[in-house]
Image (cartoon, rainbow, N blue to C red):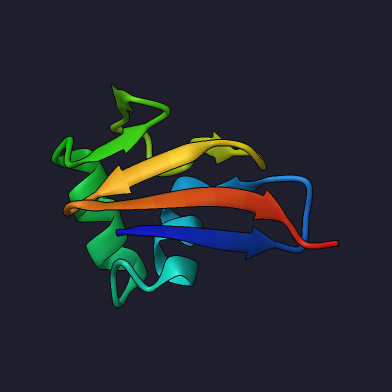
Length: 72
């Protein structure tokens, strides 16, 4: 499954993106899945929950792909 996630700002933190996309229910859950190495950012494992994600970046988690895009 591939989903486009629209953001209203220049960037968003990885944990916030996961919450906004509905991939996790809480910030605590986002923190845990990122720390556990279960999230890919642009094809590489990312364990930094505060990592900046920009429009055009690709996040993969739990079999789903989230494409970050700027809201026009």
